[in-house]
Length: 211
Length: 211
Image (cartoon, helix red, strand yellow):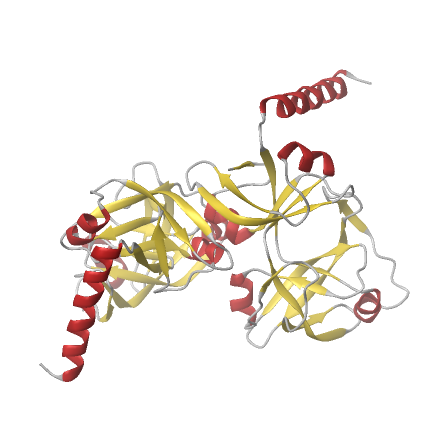
């Protein structure tokens, strides 16, 4: 182990200790830009059944990653190119956009928790080898907080609780009733979209605090 | 006075009475898109000294209006066309953009109260007859609330106070420390930008509440 790794390890251990003993309740921020989760069927349709997808980078949530490949979103009023695909494949294709994106595309997407796609908005996805028009599956993702069970225990909350968190600084605000999701597959992180990040003047890895 | 005017008058009187006696503390929302306030000198430079500007519409704040004419914003990384000019002319030109606009233009504008332009961002404005490169004057407008002295009395606040207001609904949040500006030239209205409106899922004429 080199010096930098050692410093990182000690920092993490000390931070964990302080959090635990002094009740610090800070949560790092992750800002989601528009993206899609594709079903295997739609991956085949847009890129061809023989296409080998390339992983661009891993995301903070364990097992989640971004592909190098991108798709184009087409709505009745506009087009958004170069939209990131996140993996792995899901049972059903889900498109997550912002309110501004919805206006540009001309679709009225509802604010929904991930996976709640019934009667959400329709949209066409275009890839290099084909396209698919989804009758539903386009949502504005409801802000939420991922927590490992250790974090949940430390904060005294449980899966599906709703908590208020405060963003500090120049555009300080309190996000009310944020959904908490707890799993041993999760890493502590608050997920908000770009509109929400801008409104609170938050950047990736800034911290918010439970109030 | 015709029937409609009478109904409006009675409605206003009853509303005022209810607010006063039941402590209702709701404030209507006005969402600001990017816009510029031009000095007379810059109006002349961009449109020509003989140009007669046309008023498109009056704004809710008494004496404020939007012109039909528009300008183009040009930054080091991008261009935004068809930007609204608000009148009347001001002593110094002020450009109000969102964080997203700043990214598109490639300028780092500070969050500021209107009129506080020292060392704010540089930007080029282009009109049909000329252009001007402002060394400063581009800001992200800090959210604020306009109040008539009667509203301020009803809410028990004064000019330059800071108050917290809650947006209801699907993306409920509390804007902390909002600046209150009181003048007999003002009409009760909370001014936020599109990022803030989207983050709170607010539309024009929705209501927020003092907490």
